[in-house]
Image (cartoon, rainbow, N blue to C red; front, side, top):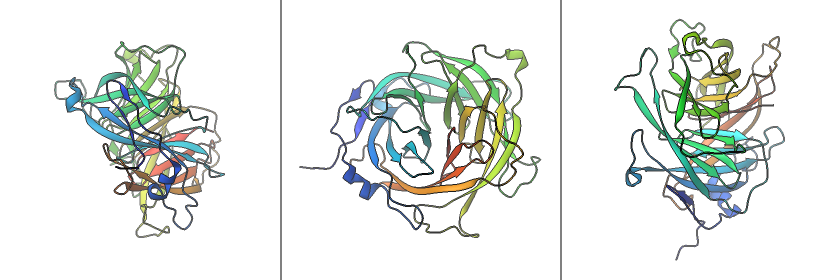
Length: 342
């Protein structure tokens, strides 16, 4: 009989499971030179996610999501990370005794690629499942590409309403080697309002997702404003087995920061199409230097259906402080990003 900690599963309804123990941390996240002690492991989920247009739960993929708590002095946050290396962060708070997840609703979100002017039958339809993470008491949005985003639970939550298209964007993102936007890659981004929760869902053509409060009035569909380029960073991120930063080996990721006038948000988007959205708060644009490195960690994530961490993939995570506004930028070795507002 196995005595391994059991993962929580969720599909049409959440399946109860045994609580994880903190002993799993030893296998889940190992420190490197400056990565400090492993962040405490809280719990994990097996989440069933259907592809766009799919209604059959038997054909849903299982996606593993782990939840950690970073107690680093300069990087305090709760971190959710999927088996694909996608991350989402939110402030540290109480953790409930019930650490299961409850399925709430689902969306099919069509996302046009950059340069695709209209929605057609060929437009990619991304499946998105919405859960209530009972451990953190937050909403958890998961895409079929293993993109994840946590959001506060509103006072009233419906389960039978569809998404409402809000606006679309097509930002350009430079790679670390590119100085101008001339040959920068463009990413299609669709923004829809979840009528069940009131949250905006930003989803890119790569299946990355991030959530943000919806404005009281949606933009005029005929007067959608283009995103306004604010500034950019090049972030270095090590793999889980990379001890130190090096000039020739360490991965560099280009990150652009834009204002979205259509929702009064600020969004960060990496050169792999990962997006993180936060409120457009005041900042000091006279600060022109690079972001401040604050912390690093390795996080282990089991694939859907795996019960222990023996075969879990470890992802290297770096944390930087945006010097213009104090936001913390978490970046995975995959190029996935998440941002914790100051």
